[in-house]
Amino acid sequence: MWVATLALRQQTRTVRFSTAAEMLDFFRLFKDGKRYQRIMEGFQRIFAATIFFGTNDQPDGKVLLDWARCHFFDRLHLWFHHGEPTQPGASGTENLVVLSDAFYDEIDQHRIPVEREVVALLANAPGVLDLYLWLAWRTWTLNGQWVRIPLFGTGGLSEQLGTGDYSADRFFRRKIRRWLEEVQALWPECPAHLSKDGQSLVLYSSKTNPAVVAMQNTR
Image 1: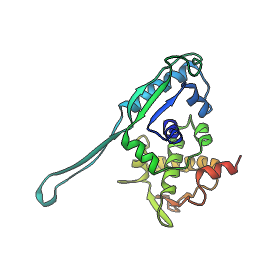
Image 2 (image 1 turned 180 degrees about the horizontal axis):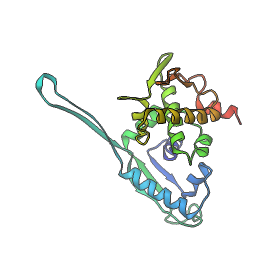
Image 3 (image 1 turned 135 degrees about the horizontal axis):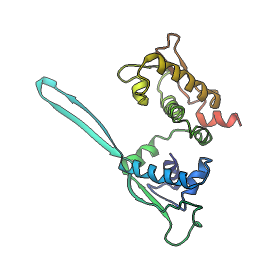
């Protein structure tokens, strides 16, 4: 998220920044060796990550493989300091991240309003953060008046969020209800609610009340 923000601000897929401390400051995180180590490991995981899309069909009795894949970064050149970072601009310490063409085009063409203060507050609550980001994206891109997302089944919310740990329906429903309450406490105008039967999440467009504006109004 932070690298994507920098890419849009700098208007290039080649992102440059002085120190890792900038990222911690951006999300209001304490600067210590443990967090620098987590940043380093996180960049390494993202660099190695590849997302695969595809289907295996058999039209007319013939096997059809329709696959695609994408990745986030083409190159990393990063300096990490376990203590306080070196001064910005110090010789040889510039950090560089080159986004893949596909990733940069995606974030440039489909910009989603997300409030960084909410992200900072949810830094230690990954489940709630996942739901907040999913809601910000899904409601912003929603075409039409409303949509009903089933909690379970193929393509359902449980599958989209990847919450395999909550295999029992009642546990996942209880978790989503609590997460949604936490999101709505930070984004009061969040256009989402659980259906009366508890089987789906009902979403409306957030074009008139995006997450950023809603958060600013609560300050």
